[in-house]
Image (cartoon, rainbow, N blue to C red; front, side, top):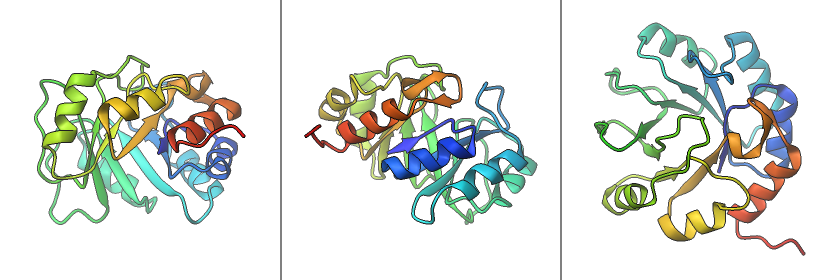
Length: 191
C-alpha cells in the first residue's frame, strides 16, 4: 500500500516505520501536497532502503519527467495522458478514471477519480478494471481506516493508495491513522 501526498521527511520516515510499501510525493501539480525537487529529495532520503519511492504528477511535460527521473524514483505515477519514450527507465503507474483512455505502457493502473480530493471510489468501475486488467490494479479514492477493509473485499485490488484519509490537513499525515490504515489493509487485528 502507498501513503501518498507525503510533504515532510518526518512523515516519510513515519510511513516507512508503520509498514507502508510505498510513499508518494506529488510534484508538478496544483495540489496542495505538491512539493519542489529539493523537498522531494529530502522526503525520499528520509525513508529507509526497502520502501518504494513514487513521484506522482499531473504534468504532461517531458522536461518535468526528466527532472523527476533525476530523483531516482522507483516508480512514476501519471494522471495525464502523455506519450513517453520506450522503454521508460522506471516502472510506470497510469491513473485511470471512468471515461479516460488507458495507455498500454503502464506497469500498473491506479483507479482513482478523486485526484487527492477524498471522493469515494466508484466500486463498479474499479471492480471492472480489476477483472479486465492484465496488470496490477491499485485502488484509491476516499479510502480511510474505516472503509479500506470493505474496499479490498469488494474490489480485490492488487494494492491500495491513500492520501486524504490519513491526514489532519492537506499533506500533514496523522501517524495513528496511517498505522491503522496499514494494519487494517494488511488484514491484521489490533491484538
